[in-house]
Image (cartoon, rainbow, N blue to C red):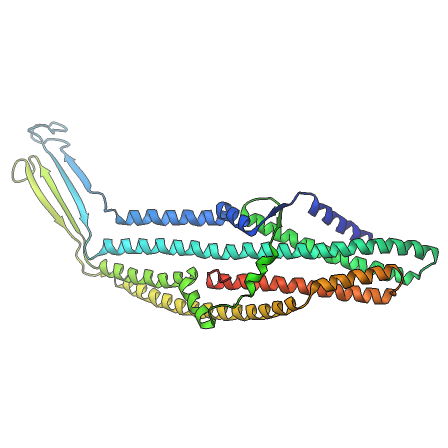
Amino acid sequence: MFKYLFLFNSLLISYHSNAQTVTSLSDCESIFLKNNLSLLAAQFNIEGSKALTIQAKLWDNPYLSSEFNARNPDNGKYFDIGKSGQKAASIQQLIYLGGKKKAQIELAKNNQLIATLEFQDLLRNLKFELRRSFYTLYFNNKKLDVTTQQINNLDTLVKAYGIQSAKGNVPIKDYVRLQSLLFDLKNERMETIKSNIEEEATLNILLADSIQLKPSVNEKLFNKYIVSLPLNLFDLEQQALLLRPDYSVSIQNVRTNEININLQKAMRVPDITLGSSWDQHGGAFNNQINLTLGLPLILWNKNQGNIKFAESMTSVAKTDRQSEELKLKAEVVSTYKKWLDANTNYKQLLESNIDNYESVYQGVLNNFKKGNIGILDFTDFLESYNQMRAHFNEIKKTMVLSSEALNSVVNKDLF
């Protein structure tokens, strides 16, 4: 028992040792967009893909070469490169044919688009994770407020019963029953604090900041989650297919492989090396100027292996796109059903007047203190009341998180 109390007190002291910063969801999201390291890395990836697009547009540099006489056999002179000696120079430029350069540019642009879409999908996932942790922390704090209030009330009763039990004025079993209920509440509070510590760690990572947050939420905010959606399930699926970046990536992967097929086919067309050369005395004429032209002979290697591989990868990408579409639709259906169920439960909760339950709790507590209610009835009521408050809190949390999940799965603020 003492070990349990020591663990609880240590966790409690640690949790409250640092001052908490009260913040709203919009403030959190502003910090998140500014500081998140994963987003910053993804932005650098986009900049890198833009640089590769620029590089794809550039032509190969021309090749300059020169030739100088090492030894003149007629006069035995070394490095005879004067007016009567010999030297030559040439310049060559590779000319792409068959649409290679165009395909390379299209490929780079498509990779740049994919990098942008991957950034958007990362933002979608991290934004949902931020909201999930934010609201979980908020509802955990609401639960802690109720639990702390009951612990304080029970703690006073337990101390009083302990004194009276020692004097023999009340049965020790009543004291033990109250003490057991108090320990249950403290254990519940400790588990909630442990959950909060985990959620705060998640938020700190997402925000790249070690501040201890206390979420602040306007209660009217929850009303926006119980509106009727203007879209049916089919519309939500179509919206998701249109707006989800990860599905768009699967489409662009198909496009990438189709461009690669065109590029590999273009590789069959030989490129021309065009150039010019000057020769001082080594040619048929003095100061001879020549036009040079070169190209490879396409005899055995017609790039047929790379073309076949690109075609196979295109088929794989098309299959992956179909799989992503099925997974996305299934995710929308599942999330939508969960939202419907949570929305129904929350509407039923609104029909209950929770303030009346709070009044009943205070009434029962006061009557128990006055001796008008027995220990058994009081503890039974308190256990039922705790379960009811926990259910109310969980229903609201589930409603909010299921709504945010639907926002995320469609990649659109539906609420």
